[in-house]
Amino acid sequence: MSKTLSANEAYELLREYNSGDFHLLHGRIVGDVMRWYAVELGYGDEAEFWQTVGILHDLDFERWPDQHCVKEQELMREKDLDERLIRACASHGWGITVDIKPEHEMEKVLYAADELTGLIGAAVKMLPTKTVKDLELKSLKKKFKDKKFAAGCSREVISGGAGLLGWDLDKLMTMTIEAMRASENAE
Image (cartoon, rainbow, N blue to C red; front, side, top):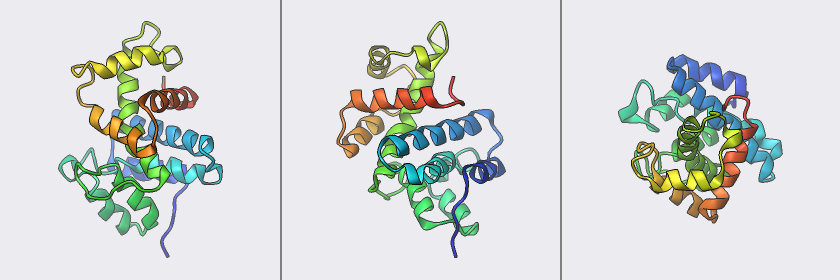
């Protein structure tokens, strides 16, 4: 029988394969963002599951970046984790490393918000206060248009994710800023 994990158990599993502060913090932030979205979009009864997906989505990235979203499926199956969890995590690599298209709203949110949290985090570091509470949509949109700023954050994935959700970029950005403001792990 496959199993699901609590958010705390997911974080411990993330720590099993990741030691870098950046990856551990990113897992926590994306987990918090996913939990916020679950509640906001009417999936409150699955909020911890969404959070677990967010925490584990980059399980393999630190050790196996060239096998990202592929190796994590193997690692999760070895732990006999729920296939729904495995699919959701792997789907954020759609079109990059895997052919698993995000279908459930949770998978679409992960696909869109994962890259965007990185862009938001980079934009926050440029603010005098260094806090997401002071980040304005207008400022984020300006950073989004500057391809040299946080160049590792794919604008194509962020835009494509908004499209998968049927949202415009303003809505995705506004909601993700709000989600990060609600996170105790984001600055």
